[in-house]
Image (cartoon, rainbow, N blue to C red):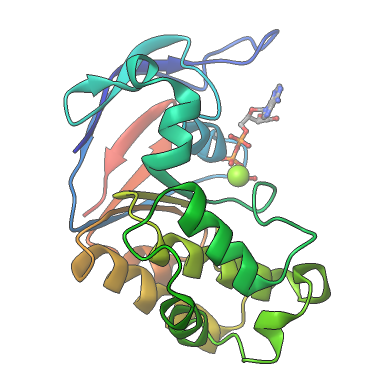
Length: 219
Ligand SMILES: Nc1ncnc2c1ncn2[C@@H]1O[C@H](COP(=O)(O)OP(=O)(O)OP(=O)(O)O)[C@@H](O)[C@H]1O
Ligand SMILES: [Mg+2]
């Protein structure tokens, strides 16, 4: 579904590339963990997959079509669901309206279905009371869970998440990872998660470590 060909990236004034000649394939119905030391380039890699930044070398293909040909704006709008800490929710709205808006904008098959949106929010542990408040009145972890519920109500087959359990306690971490597994296995999406937590990586179907500018398969 998603193919990375000879991918390379470095920031301006950076001496070495963060990574070079990366060739990977991500399949639908499967979950992937990306692990590696702080500063190794995991978030950068994810932003390339999400179409938030452009590769310096190589290209990314979605179902055989380079994403720059799809157009990055178009790609972000309808092809990929993003759970990033700093790229999250519409701050002036409630969780419920965030989901309703996302469904409308992306023309999801569930658009307009408020009951479905509420059901998914409940699944992520957001109470009926919380889903009607302004999202800014929720905690960081709660906001991230709203962003995960949003990926469930939209049709995008690719889901990328940057440390989605970084703000959660052990119990909620287990629960959220379980939901990501459902997104992969039941909704047949391709889920790619950056994480520092070995427990999270263990649960994912495959795991890659970014080390010395290369991605090495762990499982
Ligand atoms: N906008 C930027 N401009 C220049 N350098 C950057 C920029 N963003 C990140 N970097 C540098 O690129 C490297 C990789 O950053 P990145 O955020 O991708 O790492 P990471 O693996 O996600 O780390 P962490 O686990 O701490 O989140 C770091 O050395 C960082 O300082
Ligand atoms: Mg990071």
